[in-house]
Length: 290
Image (tube, rainbow, N blue to C red; front, side, top):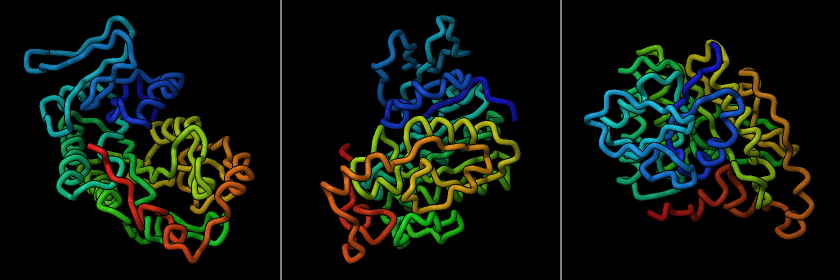
């Protein structure tokens, strides 16, 4: 599969979306941005509020196209997916929330996106799954990278449950409709790790862009599940399925280890928060603020 020219990036105003707005275009992608919030950081963006009378979204100034809408807005989604070569789906709630909110944003919203993709003939999606789909899996005692993508799903939250649903939905749409998906169980994507747990789960922004590029361009992925992490010395899970796509991580959390360990100490296997992959999501999950 040749590199897509135009990629729809949902959740473009979120934390990960904000990072990828800067890091994906150098790989040759023209982004179309979708979020329920206006993306104020981008100057001179085209804000679309009423799509009913618009025949085609066209950007002649070279700035990213931007659509401000919710995933429940089926008309906006149809316009967003029209003419794109692939979709990177980050939109949704990224922490724990009441089930009703998770249902609307993460479960129904992902279904609406796949339906829009099917109707438009889009054949490649990269879905932002999460390590929290397997959050209650016991963590390895060391950085053995032993946990594979075939480990049974053990979600730690309604949020993690929704990511398992997204993986299954992707599998269904591959089998029924031939839409290929790479589901990326993202670890902790941020500029640098801030906890000892993140020494094992960290995905640097630069490696995140490398992984997305591999997921967008690898041939014949069907439905593939991969873990999203850098090449961390203390890595808990197996990156072989990601590497099979052509992903070559360049970063390692180890340079941050001494400072974090001095401040926080080693993980304690007797501490329920430290005993599982999901960390605090298994004991006192952070709540979505909205």
